[in-house]
Image 1 (cartoon, rainbow, N blue to C red):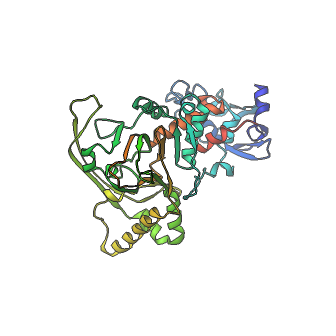
Image 2: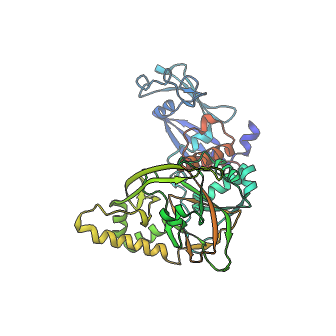
Image 3: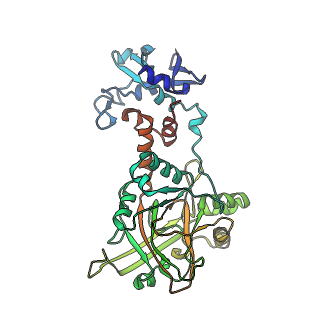
Length: 434
């Protein structure tokens, strides 16, 4: 353990401690100072009495909030031979022994600016350089998988190439992150093929013309998080720029609107723009070998903000699909302003300065964060063009959880200390070695 401690960065090693009336002050080897209240330390104890190691949760019998003294007093506070903070409690808690991992303590120091600085996504325009990852490396190397997921956090878009041209391999790629999101259809992996006349009758994605940039399933309570689209066929006899994929950073457009017209930004974050979808008696084959198709139907309605903000006022989600928008539910005095703001977003969405455009070829999988990146394609005008895609969805939480697990594994720390750390804390811990 001594060797391991010497390999840690100074910010994760304790230099000295000082006890005060109501807490413990730690000076770290990088010079930073942290203060931890006695009550916070006792309430956060990870000893077997307070914390169940198998379920990684508080022990109801040992951690009784109604019995914890509000002014606990330590009998002895030391640094043990492994560099941990070691506390033997006195008073009502006499005999209670708490040991705290120093790295865990450091990422729970809320006087450290690094912890307050949430990792900000990299905003981008048409000049973006999208990262490409090899299918087989993603499937077999956790470090590559983490790099690919980190890229989705940073840019919201990535491309996997050299993917086998079959549904089983496509499904395996999605499930490398987590289980597929259940769709309101018989199939969770869907095929977009221009030969499907039934689909062309009800879906803009299959039709001739341009598919304008949008996010998917805006009419549902919780839109899909990550979308996968694998090209399995592209045959264009005209050899021109038909059916090129387009992606736009919705967070970037939100920033542009906020800068140029704060009132428009306010409208798009506070006023509702409803979305609806109605599909009755639609048929979908479960596989190519099925002689018949399964019927499904659904009716969806949702009131959305086009731009959604988190508790800190930061943009965390974009919901925009003009084709599923239904009549506004807004007071008459705001109709013109809201539609003008909405139109401004639509104008930016079509602006070549913000559209990244590229050809998705067979064996390539486009992966986008549907909460951030709007996707579409350039026009199809030749009936001779053949194009087929496989598609599937992941829950946003599934993607986030998989990344958290990979970050945790990179830290080398016990699950005892990883459980409950913020994303930012895990990112810092994953980089804790010199």
